[in-house]
Length: 495
Image (cartoon, rainbow, N blue to C red; front, side, top):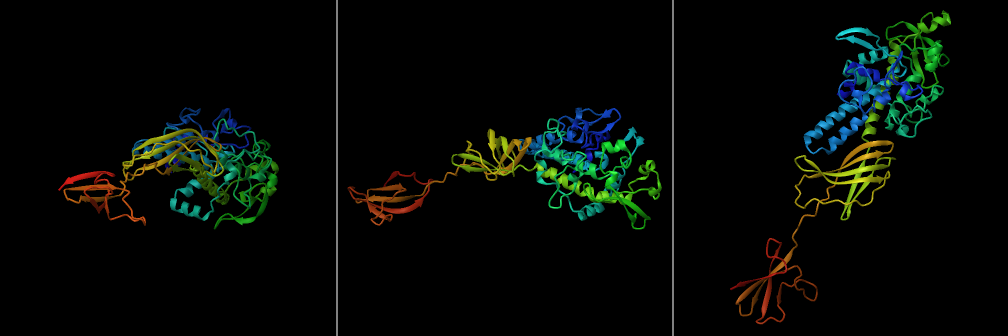
């Protein structure tokens, strides 16, 4: 999605792509540089007015979750096909930009308050402090074929569906600022600094932890390799010095020198190559040891092997969550019932039934407000007008929902539905008899759906009209529909 790249433009938007899950509140979880503090990525992702939010230069337009919902609704309900196509184009750009924010939560620098900013004056770069891990991934991604092949070799890590459930143990979860539970993809509120074990990948299923919590607790960034800096350890207690083990000499690459690497066997996810110390590390005084710890290409490669599968999986989970709403409609002579097929989430809101003509034009047939449907359940019968029997072939109908779905206050969903069309007017069949009197002076045509029967119940092909004088004898001549003589009528034809 192009929106993933657009989220970094203009460049000042990147200051809103940081989230420290150990901050006291999400209001304080954004990038902090001195006395300056910006909006947390978890709040930015759901910011209803990004273009006017506090910031240096956020750029035109709004590309947050509420905007994606509004554009999805327009893409489903707009009258003209062109307007709906434009809605889908804007929708997928917006989703790309919200996915970018999730992906940035896999970068340790973005979750450990490590700015790595670039300052420009026009085209002149005045200051640039790049993050080594981001630069390493950017280099990989510069060759799309190689990057795609690498991702294909790494098993994608999807979060558990339960990640959107009840909030974690931390009071930092702020539903006023980020009301949609999709925020749990970044921060579920479970890791609080003293419990790194909750960030370990479960052996019996997918993780139920936010991506920012995972990258914060298990990895270093360039300027936060805290081994003996009390102030830094206070902010980011893990990985802690006591979590680490200095491993045996290992090749730094296919043809690189032997190096010893710090590994983290527990206290969260096991990390085989966490950092590389100086060759003299064991002989340095404690005050200098921290300054000699780095992240070399071998470390960054291992970080990518652990973090990229989660960046991909959590991005896919965002799309799955966005499009999770599933509804159906059942028509009957008395109206329509709406069914909620969304797993484990009740729905309360407005349902619409739209008609789409063969030329693509959509119009509303019916709208029902404040309808509540339990997961797996159906609504009461709702009144609906029917389309006329001469509705053009190819006419389609759509069921649209907008309202609260589970924990999301303003969800949108749409699905094809059967149209409430009247049965076509099919003329009934009837028998036509020609009847002549005994004197053969007049002929009658007699049309009926219920011709005379014999004692065995068989229709008579010929009969005498009872009580007629002169005698009238009738014989069946045809089996016709309404384009012939009207039913139950007699026409006279003088001979």
